[in-house]
Amino acid sequence: MGLGGLSTGKILIILVIVILLFGTRRLKGLGADLGETIRGFRKSMGDDKPVTDEPKDT
Image (cartoon, rainbow, N blue to C red; front, side, top):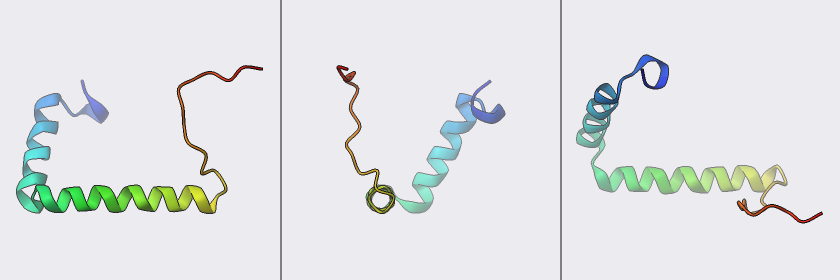
């Protein structure tokens, strides 16, 4: 059982269809646009601090 009842095979088939429809160049552009949108949203919410995995010393 994968995400929401989707098995790994079904996810791979969906991924292949998406790549065939949009192409890898367009998917890169969409990913970059999505990243910029998320950064802009965080900045507007005042939460534009970089996320790190290091624990803070208190």
